[in-house]
Amino acid sequence: MRTFAHIGIPSEIKRDGSIEIPGAGLFVTDANKSPNKIEWLYFLPDSNMPELLKKSTHIAYTTDDISAEIAGKDILIEPFEPLPGVKAAFIVEEGLPIELMQVM
Picture (spheres, rainbow, N blue to C red):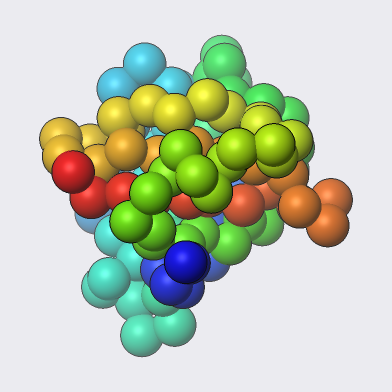
């Protein structure tokens, strides 16, 4: 089961309070500090992240079982640990990136 977490929007500027996601060439804001649950994403020019993620808004959900949620789906980014204690993966649904997160 999925529960809405946030909307991620790529930005051409690095927003105040952004944190770096190690190894991704990416800085993100904390969606929990946004009244609209917006996470701003700033990609460094040499970021190795997929172009679809760099160019498109994504919707993020939490789940209790990330493996079950991605099974048989079009996987954009295999499961990884962006922050300590959080496993995330990206799939593509309806032409957009969908982020799935599981708190470990």
